[in-house]
Image (cartoon, rainbow, N blue to C red; front, side, top):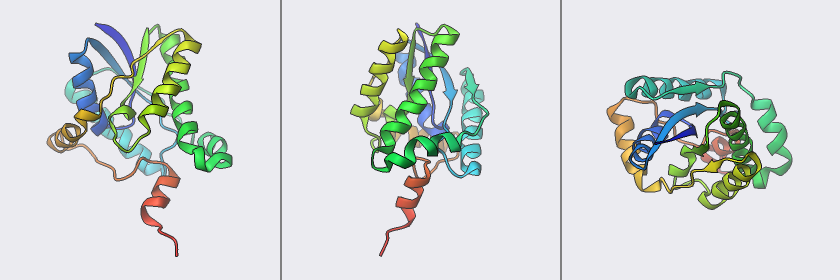
Length: 178
């Protein structure tokens, strides 16, 4: 089993992802760092959902308790059209640094389960950071487990969100313009 620090965005995405990673020979420790999530209550609900899942499945969880929305906005606002890339980099860089500091040989992210995320960009950023920090990036395609993750989230009664979490995504979900 290879120890893996797994950036985890929420409980639902962690369900099938951790199952699959265990089957593939990884021993995941989940890591909650998501400064992009807005508003704060949404960030809190996702954290609590992940804590519930971690307790149910007895999977180790490391929480970053600071809500760093300002840092996220400072990095992404000047580049709104490329915001996802900045967001991926911010979260994966922090995960890679944490993995290195804690002695994990590998890191990955549950973002790779979502058919709505840019898989190619996530993997490119992950591979670049892996080289920079002398780690391995787990770039397994988790998307085949997406429907199962939704099913498991219902079974475990985990909070399920309707958007990626950032203020821009929330806007795009509800505001259609004129």
